Length: 560
Picture 1 (cartoon, rainbow, N blue to C red):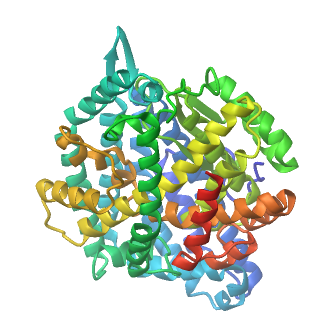
Picture 2: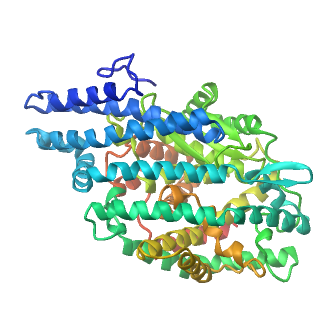
């Protein structure tokens, strides 16, 4: 997939600040002829340089998160962030100004218009004084990951990472579930002050960054930086209300039925992951290698492109599936921009949810493959609202055939759990997003204020789960969500995208080949067209009004 370089030397040393600066300076001083062909060639060179540097950064991030105890990996990543990132930020601002001042910019609007719109905003928001603050944010996120990556518990003579404790919550033994849930929750609470302090530092840095840009408030700043041109903060708040009115009652009914099936008087937080009929936990795979092999079988049958793309990932060892001590929490897919390849990072512990995580990240990976021919790095930076359609669609599509993992009866159990999670996700998305809206509208809030804000939101989106006796766990539940620390305001996208994914799934059930062809065609466009147009090309609507929500949720409930 690697494109032949036309500008960056093959022996280029990305750690050498002088070499990096020299390449940027050569672009800055270049005499670009006054025609669109010359400007386009210059843009491609600039994109190549940033693709090379982005891949170095991504690979170092992967190495650091794979082992947070690896001091060299941490140092290599920190060195890049501290020494190279500031050069990229400052020089890119100069190049953006040079490009937009060129006489032929208007002649490239038809090809690069979406990017130019973002560039104009970036020029407006760029402030030199924010460069060291952005570096400090990266460093603080790294410190946060070190805290969470070190979390483990001892249980029956063995040490487990917190993701490795997840299978115990699926046990039919309620006492065992409670005991292991308490162990995990108590371990998280040991670091609640450290995580509060970490959030305070990040919050202060981010507020200062937005203030330096002259933005009216942080929401104004973050919506601009995220390129949210097609919806507003008010639209988000209206979405929260729609979820509260339309979807939350459905989740309450599901949980009421779960309580009845379990035969318990009150539904506790350790009752949410187990089988409602108290059957043994589903065991879809033995280890990470087995998980990859079984997913590969599914993708081979699904579509010629998924068969080809996933096999490339297997052959090139581009998936790190297993949870282990010292590995950063969570899961992600990241692009290697010069190679035009994806990488999947997970913390699989043998659960049914892990299987869907690989389907999810696989969907992101296919997006990377589909848009590999986009000519500039900016068009391979996909809007999250559509990126998550690619991943969430694949989770739902996977429910069509789980024969590589399960018997028919176990597959039904798995699909039920997956659809239950679809309903659960919406109120959680609304909780996290509304929490951020509240926090960033109160620049002087304290840790105690934050706790109370979260508790009020938990009450608003209460689904019938009883946390009695575990007040602290409930009050700090937000700390489990890494997005709040690492990527603020990246969460409403999951709700918007889930509506898109449900539409793709409906199309797939009618005509699988057409639905996938439309999805991959839309994915191939990268970020070269507007968000509504991406949805349209995928055969779905960009709309999160009640008229769209209600029939989609009814469809899920019917399938349940």
